[in-house]
Image (cartoon, rainbow, N blue to C red; front, top):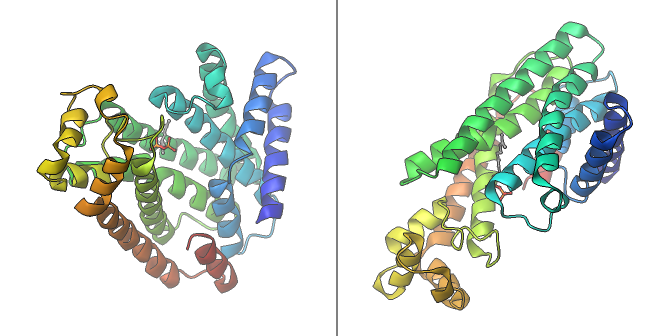
Length: 305
Ligand SMILES: CC(C)=CCC/C(C)=C/COP(=O)(O)OP(=O)(O)O
């Protein structure tokens, strides 16, 4: 996949140069793409796996994957601007109106680039509609996260299912449609399971961090955080006090080790990891039942194991 990653990255830059005239918007976009391609490209990879799983042979899968990654980049920029938790990212060190403008332009460019990545006009229109629908679903979920009303596990899982799962559905389905197959409901279902499993994994990581992305320090709800609040016990009363705003950040900043201890002792990490694993196992068994190229199904499983 490393070879594909380089090709997807080059294609993203090529698309920006093709869709935008020479000027400041293009310069910013290229710079943001260069920043983005330092990270793994999970969503572009999902496109490639599904393209081959569904026996695609037109040979333009890298462009389809690059168009998906452009949409993901737009959402990454918006998410970082909204959460304010990624101060080292290039777009967070750019005047906010400029960063916002690049994200908005990418959201217009990505469906056009996706549609143009397949030879057939009708198939292109289907791809663009599918992308916009999934982005809109994700925007609804992101809004639930922003207003932060996740008071229990059900509302939290509902938010995650809406916010993160659509990115996985969009990427897997782009590969399926670009390969010339119709919408596949089985793929949509397992993509949701994988999306929720991945977000829970992300949440466990963000629970244990002690920097600007720490969900605890940011008083942000997540599955392990909800468990911790319920089960930390009196010894760790300061955790609930801080979380509900009764004490200030200065009173907890030196309690990193005690916080980790509470996460372990309360079972928050174990609980969230087991929940994540349940979603992952459902993804595996649904993938197993899918009629697709076995060699590529195995590669997909290995990548997400
Ligand atoms: C339409 C938009 C903007 C959708 C964004 C959805 C999304 C998956 C955000 C990342 O969540 P996160 O904030 O939990 O992830 P991270 O910890 O990586 O910032």
